[in-house]
Structures are given as C-alpha cells and as structure tokens.
Image 1: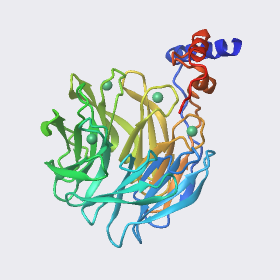
Image 2: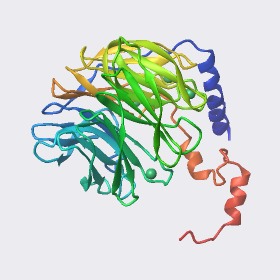
Image 3: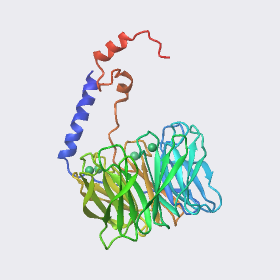
Image 4: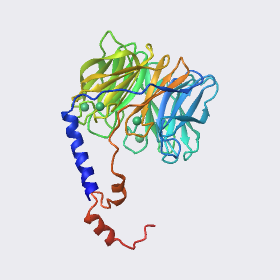
Length: 404
Ligand SMILES: [Ca+2]
Ligand SMILES: [Ca+2]
Ligand SMILES: [Ca+2]
Ligand SMILES: [Ca+2]
C-alpha cells in the first residue's frame, strides 16, 4: 500500500513540477551511425520483430531496397531483413502502419520511378512479404497514414511531385487500396492527414513547394474537397509537413518545414490560421512532431538537408516554440523518424543521411514518464486506475470461471 501511495503521489506531483519549472535543457547524445550502403532517402520506426524493442527501416538505392535494422533496447542496432524492391523502381518515402496480416507493423513504400505505392506485410515478426502495389501519380513523395473514412482500416496518401496531384489510397480492409486523385499546387512534396474538425473523417493537407502554399482538403465523409490554400511566407518554400496539437486544445494544428524556419498554423474552429515562423538551425527538408524534452508538450524536429544538421525546437507551452538544440548529422539529412531506441521513455531520433550513406541514431538525454505501474496492469481488475478491495471483490465474484 505504501509503495502504491508513493507512486500515486509522484505521478500527481509531476505535472505540477512541469508547470512551475523552468524550461527543460534539451540535448541528445552524439549520434551513432548505422551503415546504409547507398543513399538512404527515408526512415521509419516500429516494433518489427517480436522482442519489444523499437527497430528502424530505411530505403536505399543501388539496388533499390528496404533495410531493416533491429534495435536492442539500448540504442544499438543489428542488420535484419532486406526487402528487394526491384530494379530502378526508385526507393522513396517509407511509412509504418497496419496494412494487412497480423498486428505487427507493416511497411508502405513510395516507388518514385514506378509511380506506385507498395505495401510489405509483416510476417509475424519474422520478416516481410510482398503486399499490394497501387498506381498513383507521377513521382510519389511524402506519405501519410491514417483512417480517413472511419472503417478501422488504415489508408495512405501521397504527394505526386511531377504531376501536381495527391493520391489518396483507401484501404478495402483486405490489403488492397483504391486510389483517388486530387489536384494540388506546383511541386507537391508531402501529404498529411489532419483532423481539422471533430468528426472521425480525416482531412488532408499537401505542401506545394514551388507555389509556396499548402492545399487543405476537407473530408465530409463523401470525399475530399479543397477548402483552403494556405500561403507560406513568400520568402520560403514548404517541404515536409506534420499535423499535431501544439497548443493542447485537442484540435490538430499544422507545421511545415520551410527552409530555415518551421511554419506553424493553428487550428481555430476547423480552419488553419495564425501563421507563425519559428527559426531553425538549418535549412529544413523533413519535419516530425513529438515530445522531445519530456515535459508532455509536442515539440518539432527537422532534418536540415543543406546544413547537415537536425534541429529540435521545444514547445513553450501554448503552441509557441523556443529554445531547443541543433546537432550535426551526416551529409544531406533528408528524412527523420522517432522512436524510443533505449527504452527510457523518451523520443530518440533516426536520420537518413543521403550523401554520407548512413542513418544517424541520436539518443535523447531526457527520460520520460515510465508509464503505468506494471503491477497495476495485472492487478487493476476493474480498470479504475487503483488496485484496491474492489478489484479483489471482482476477482472473488468470478473465482473459478474458465477463461477459455
Ligand atoms: Ca479506412
Ligand atoms: Ca491545437
Ligand atoms: Ca515538449
Ligand atoms: Ca529514449
């Protein structure tokens, strides 16, 4: 009882300390590297095998393939499956999701030269098998994953860089996809599902690099309709984009990698507005959102392709961004992904360095909330968050029942 009470006291105090405390120092250990052989262009993370530790996968070329490296839960990785994609298909963006088979995370990859999105299904933690290949527009980039039609099956969208369209791939729940085409602006780079209103039909944003704009499509359940075109600062061009709730009001906002700034729009009643540019430490290509200083608010990290760095800027508490850190990676970091590689409840970073043929692994020095007390997961029979006599009564009431 005493131990349980102490734990509750600690968990009660922690948020108060965050509110009252000074800004958390942000740092990452000097990155280690995974050999990526030739020109890694995208990276994804997931529990790909059965050991419970976060793994990484990345696309490389010469020949085009996906390399999977298994994490050891302490920040180190060993080579796992190699997925050959076929000669000249153009190994592009890579995302993780549930696209078929069992619950283990699957992969979807953009085949830039073949104008298609292909899935690979996780074979119960023992490698991947070919899923389906769906034709999209020309030169697909910037994949996003989400269930846009609320049927429980994960859908995919991409930006088709060379024909100024985006494709939405709606899952049939059986591993196949039906593609629809949306017209967007010039040189689209990234699609992002975003929950603009409070229904479960996900909306969609697409970054238009050469138009210096973001196309916003509202999904009313019957399809996607262009509802807004957001102007980026005319001095900046957008590349990667990401949807997340930055001001903690429960509505998803949008951030874009726009050269040496992260541009953030706030969701006000379903409209993205109040554009603000937050300075970065380099010229950004890709952007992800996550809590990187272990205080519970959603921060931003960017891969700064032209400066060989990653920047992390921390949420100051109301959706603004302040001090963070910029650290060196390899040459031409084009994409990044996060995962807790050393199992200490903080988001670490994996960065694809295209021109140095490596993936950088940067471990976050902050340690997060370890999550629910594992004792409670077994003993909190009625799931009310406390182990007490009520749980014992429930257990006694059901004593002797067969569970099969
Ligand atoms: Ca769906
Ligand atoms: Ca918000
Ligand atoms: Ca934070
Ligand atoms: Ca960590």
